[in-house]
Length: 318
Image (tube, rainbow, N blue to C red):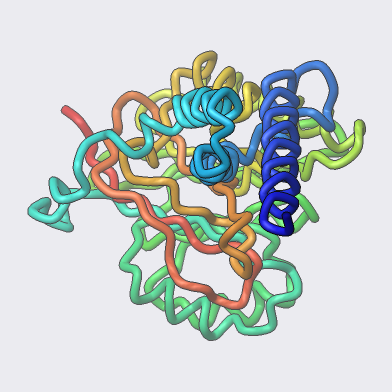
C-alpha cells in the first residue's frame, strides 16, 4: 500500500515536472511576443537534460505516453544544439602553427572584481593577439595597464556599458561607437596584423531584464548588424551579448549581418554564471566575418568574475 502511494505520487510529480519543462520550452519559442518569454529561450541545454531525466523516470513508472512526450521534448530542445556539438573536430587545430592563427580573448572582468593581477597574468600567458574586456572600471583599468607589457596598444570606452580592446599589434584606427541612444557603446579597433588590417569590435549589450533594457539590447543588436555590414575586411565582434545562441534575436542578427559564431562545432561550454555550472549559459560570444574560420574555441578558468573568459583561435582564409 505504502509502495503504491509512493509510486503514484512520484509519477504525479514527474508528470508535473514534464508539464513545467514543456511550458518553459514553449515560452522560449515565443520569445518575440514579450521580453519575459525570451528569457526562457536561453536554457535549451538544461531543458534537454531535464527531458532526458524525465523520460527515464516516466518509463520506470510505466507512463509510456508521458515518456514519449518527454522524448519529443528532448528532440525539440536539442536540435539547435547540434551545430555546436557536431561540427569540425577540435583536433584539427592542434597541428595549426600558432603564428598562423589570430587568437582573441573576450572576458567580462566584473566591475566588483578586485584581482586585476590574476586577470593580467592570464592575459599575458594567453598569447592573445587581441583582448576584449567588459565592465572594466577606470580604477581597474589603471591597475591593469601596467600589468600588460605585451599589450601596449589599447582603446578603452569607460562608460558603464562600454568595452576595452587591448592588442599587441599596432593600432591603425580606434573609436567608440554608440549602439543605442543612452545604451551600450562599442569599442572599435582596427589593427595591423602582419600587414593585414583587422577590425575588432568589443561590445557589452544591455542585460534584458525589464522592457526598457530589453529594448536597448535589441536596438544594440540591430546597430551591430548595420556596423558589421559596413566594415570592410576581416571583422571580429566579441564581448558580452547577454543572450544565448538559442534566442531568435541572436540567430536573426547572425543571418542579417553575415557573421558566424566561432563556437559552432566546439561544444556548449557555459560562460556565465561562473559560480554555478548547472544553470550555466553561453552569453559571451565571438562572431566572425566570412574571411575567418574558427579552428578552436573554449572557455578559460575562473578569474574572480561571474563570467569565464572565452578564447577563440581563428584562421584568416585566403
